[in-house]
Image (cartoon, rainbow, N blue to C red; front, side):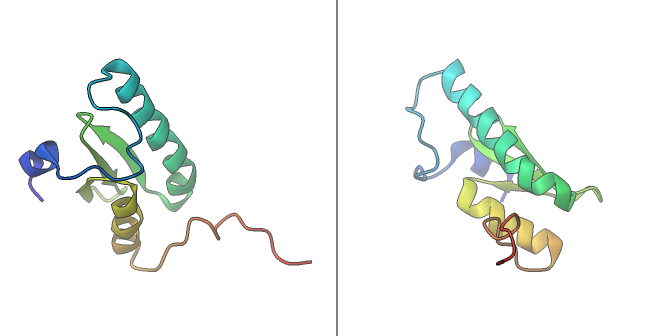
Length: 97
């Protein structure tokens, strides 16, 4: 997707819980979302950043990057970059006793 399409965006995903037009508070919420996602992504050598308050950019250490609209797409893009399935809920699950 080109940068302009990412800025214009489509419908809002449920993970975008902020109210449009909240300004700085909405932007702060997006930074918090990216920081929380990075707790999972950084050990995989990936990084998520806010892109103009409209989308996110997922980057790899090789310079690959992908513009994603919402969190549902973050995990799909991460799987594509890693070349394997990714289940963020199972990554930190403890082994059964």
